[in-house]
Amino acid sequence: MSTVVHGTSREPRWKRLPVIWQLRQSVGLQRGMLVAGLLLCLMFVIMALLAPVLAPYSFNQLSDDAGNFPRTAPPSDAHPWGTTVGGFDVLSRVIWGAQTALSTVIIAVVASLFLGVLLGLVSGYLGGWVDRVLVTIADAVYAFPTLLLAIVMSIVISGGQSSKWGGIMAAALSITVVFVPQYFRVVRAETVRLKAEPFIESAQVIGTSTPRILSRHVLRNATRSLPLIITLNASEAILTLAALGFLGFGIVPTAAAEWGYDLNRALADVASGIWWTGIFPGLAIVLLVMGVTLVGEGLNDLSDPRLRIRRRVAGTVTATTGAAADLATTSATTTEGGRP
Image (cartoon, rainbow, N blue to C red; front, side, top):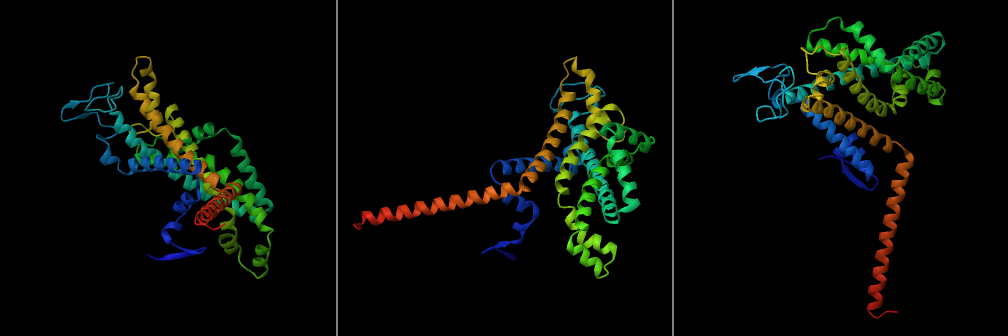
């Protein structure tokens, strides 16, 4: 296996991968949070990818060879997490809901990231009337409450989408509009700062084209803080999607399984003591949001230079203490051997 030189040691290249590198830099509670978050996210990714294999039934299946499913049946061998008031298997709905949630969140985050970064680069670098217009639009969009804006955009975009991917795209684009101003403001501020740096001015003097300056010099330096924002937005997107489904503005229930819609349908069951129709979709939302949040908090801690300095200082103190202990042991051994 090929290796790279790092300090005085040679390390395999796989140890330099971003995720492995972040894990190696973490320590104590940081590592625990990061590992727990990654495991939770990995669990839901596996559920989403293997939903046809893991789910005992389809998300909208109401019967099998034995006949129709019972309504609001408690957990049993045939239905480990029970059934809903509509006769759907709760376990299958939760597993298929993971596929819906992750698909929507990924599309929303990628689309908002692309638009926000592109508009932020153009606005911050060109300035002038283009910057003023884009900043005004971004501030106007940012002034709206997140959920209210998502509801309005969902009504405008959906237009009665009845297919699975049509509903997912409509929900994702509704959430995208909410997140674009966040990426825009961060990237624009960094671009304005970088535009005055000497290396940008040197590139302008030698006649480098604007697209090349933006892609080769500004983009890499202006997007370093975005991974932290992405994790925060991903968790917010999960909650926004669940809220849209809960209020009836999300994905059509016949097109795909959605946790927010299942929670809405479970409200009437609480008074009757039927707990399984609401607790499992709600727990899925909590765990997925918790996993993404823990990853974001872990990355945030690792990006803090003060924490890295503390880690290096702690490592130096430990090494110094170990060396002192070895020296004391050697001195004690020498003294016992008869030397003064």
